[in-house]
Amino acid sequence: MSVTPALIVDDSPMIIKIIKRSLLVNKIEGYNFTEDSIYSASDGMEAFEVMGRAYGIKLIITDINMPYLNGDEFIEILKDTGKLSDLEVVFVTSSSTQLMLKREIEDSILGIIYKPFRYESFAEGFKSLQKQKVLKNIELQKIKIEQVEKKEFIEKICFLYLEDIGIDSVCANLDMIIDESFSYAQITQDEYPELLYSILSIYLFEMLIDHKVSHKKIKCLLKHSESSSHIKKSRLGLMDGFKRELDYVNSTDLRPSEIITALVSHTFDTLSMATSHVKKFSAKDSKLYAQHFEYIIKEFIKIDCEFEDEKLLKLMFEYKEIVEFSEFLYNYLKNREIFKSIKAVHSSKILGIELKNRLSKILKITYALRGCYCSNIEFYIFKRAKASSEIHRFFKKNMPKSIPSSSTFLHFKGKVTTKELRDYAPFEMQKLAVISGELKTLEFFKDTIGNTFKNWGVFCFAKSAIFEAWLCSNKPNKIVIDYDFKGSGFKNGVEFLNLLYKKYPLLKHEAVVNGIYFITKEQNQEEIKEYRDAYNFAKISYPIVYKDAFEVLIYD
Image (cartoon, rainbow, N blue to C red; front, side):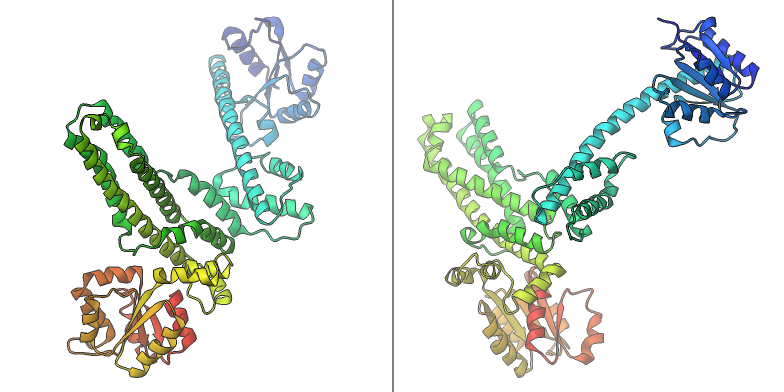
């Protein structure tokens, strides 16, 4: 190894001797010192003179506090003149507290060794700084790779935002602004929203584009980019499970009953589990609804960028998976694949017929399940829409006399005609039950509300016994109860509802999905508050006004 020229700068001759001996006696990786290759200076000015004699110095060990020119000032001058790039620098100091150096100086040196030290401990300190530098370089390389990935992600979000506001062509200024934003510090995910806001604001300002950057839209773009990536698209595993069992029965010698169990049980159990989640929703025609769901979601996101959420994505993925499997199973049965793809069926025609019957039943289940999923997705989309203040305002302003649903929204958007709208009517029928002792109240709901909500059946009851008899063969979607409704065994409408829940437990479950409403007079307002925690209901106030009743029934 070639000899390493080194320069020790310190106003203490003793320190110079200790450091020189340490360099000569101790083996330090990457360096080879001799007596003649180690130079010294008492301050920064003298150090410049030594370096000016062209000794090719590769290592500088310098005190910080010295007369005429401090060590950090000496190094700063070397940096400014471009002479520091080929040098390794170690500071030594007797400071009793942790030194705070300028960032550019701290990044340019190997490190600091604190006095007092002996020649053995100085060498150990030097070696420790070398190890720290190796680890730091590894960490910096890791950060550099992460920074590249983060810059690409930030750029992607910027493009999505600009595309959303109608800017398709983006100039190089955006890359420059992003580079400047990443040049000084590590950026964390928590800082993304503010960083993006700043980048987009500066870019649009420089491009003379008059647009106020939406902080909410930025957060939505970040949220969707993160959430959509971790949701497993194949959630039910129907297709993979069936094909896996098919491979299993062909590779193993099984009895016919075991083959039927293997091919049917897993699929049936999975479909049963899926059915249990959506069975409370009456099936809707998937051909009518499913083709429009993604369009409706996309339009709602335009109104409120926070509209889409994880549950909705999961429902959509599961629905698509069930559709894919049912289409596969239909073709599997239609093309008589049972008799071609299962070895055991070649020697047992009865087994093939039994499998066909079992799988045909499963196919029917998938068709019914598709309808229930459509109903669940439809319900959840409009439940989320009602919870959004932006979409809420949109409905009130643009569809003031329509019940928000897939059909009415699609009709408003011109995606379905008035004639096609009639096809949706049977699937959007709702039963509204009204219970009150006031005949005028019942007349209002029967005539005014009944004539407005064409797809609703409005059923009015003045007697509890008649309503309970009706419940035996009907399932209401919404129940409106007059708070002043009294009878034997209950003093108000809330107590009546409680009795109904005890007699008809499923009604309480349905009320969570649909709605319970109480008609209240002003003097009842305080009294009814005590029931709010126990019962989830909305209020329709006396005197009943069409607009107020409409909005409560639709939006609350």
